[in-house]
Figure 1: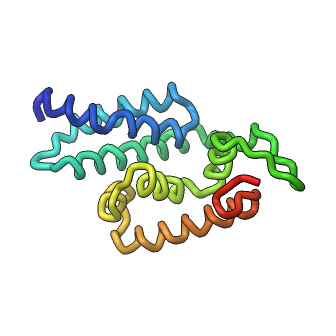
Figure 2 (figure 1 turned 180 degrees about the vertical axis):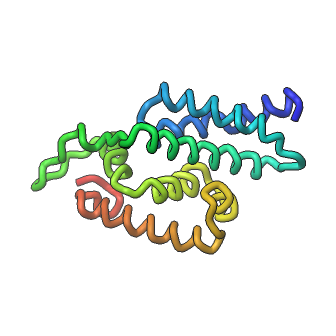
Figure 3 (figure 1 turned 120 degrees about the vertical axis):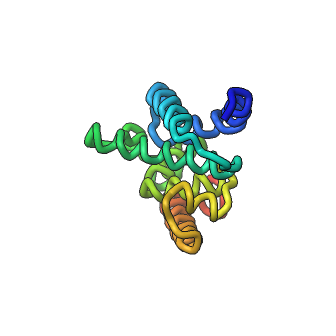
Length: 165
């Protein structure tokens, strides 16, 4: 891959990949480090004849591996919802950004990745399967379960019919 092609790929993928890493790690500085490492690994891989979607999938798969490696290395995962107070039980108080982050964090890491790739990135089932080392048919089932779990979490915390009360 020549420099111009890499710069074009970087321009199309870096901002969203960084957002994904920040969301997963809750630490922009660490996200920037892992973003750089993902692109270094991408350049070392020397993907021959790969199209844009394959290269993007490789980057997300690499980022997911880096996140898992970091989790194993530190022996713990950062959880934003532990630092935030629970909303009042009788009348939920909602701050959309903080509440959704805290509620999203209640999902398993793989479910968060599935929902992020499907609904934030707009990735196809095939692309998600490649990024997360799954079968394409398994993505459909896993997405259904992740949506159901997120729906239950939202119901439990007073987010009925998509609007805060």
